[in-house]
Length: 379
Image 1 (cartoon, rainbow, N blue to C red):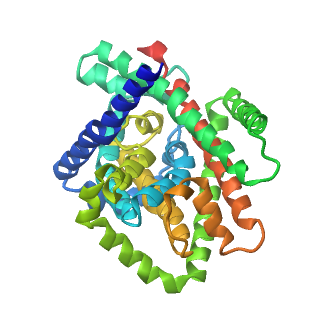
Image 2 (tube, rainbow, N blue to C red):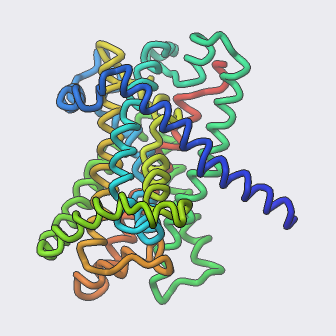
């Protein structure tokens, strides 16, 4: 077993630290150049098209598709992952997180536009689609399409959903009632019941739930972050200066590249916004829009919301408290302790727990919607 675990760890390290990063970054840069940096040129237009209404009673609006994809992107990693990236990679990780979001936006635009172009109609009048469908239709490879669909389902079921659930229950470790033997089971059981209730209500219930929770939780989270930053405004110049200077600290980068700001920021950006992974196009395909590019612009905006807004809120909320990042505090502990320095009582830990619950819940809804809008039976 030890040899198997070591082999998996080595393979995972190479895949996540080198191969995937090279592929996703390379694709993002290529798409950015080919589209003449659409993420910058048409950013204002991406905000405008969110309000476009669908035609027909069964249509899914651009806003609803945006909320489902954002629910999938914005999860516990926006809190736990950012905290870990800062604690391991330092202040500079934030800069590289921003850079990856800008590059990845081009990939999000292209993959979601393709999902609209190659989407298919269902008997109820709606639509469905995603990477497997345009792999099958454009590349004429049914086998590769099925492989991709299976890999994506396993990734969400075993990877993202299990990790999100674990991160959620880990926030309760800060409370006296936490019991390692029973609390995770209780939290998991309650979470499963709530998610099951929404899923058994069909896609419309998921759309309504995410359409309400995602904007509310995002706005409240950003407001609290802004309050923390405002209370410590005198530290903002120092924090921003360290973000940019430490991002290019070549000695630190090449001395321990795996744990450097560059690597941690890149990993956090790629994992958080999921641009190029092939997940968001499944939600993009169900939207009813007048032109495929409009949904590409909407999903491009989703990357901005996830990384530049939510992840930055977490990073600045922590760093502006003055608590120095430490690898021993990586995870929920760092952000909970940061807020404890600002707010009296237990407000900080309780707020992060509530945020984690909402982020994890909506992420599970967005991810679990995958089998419905991306059915293997159609392949």
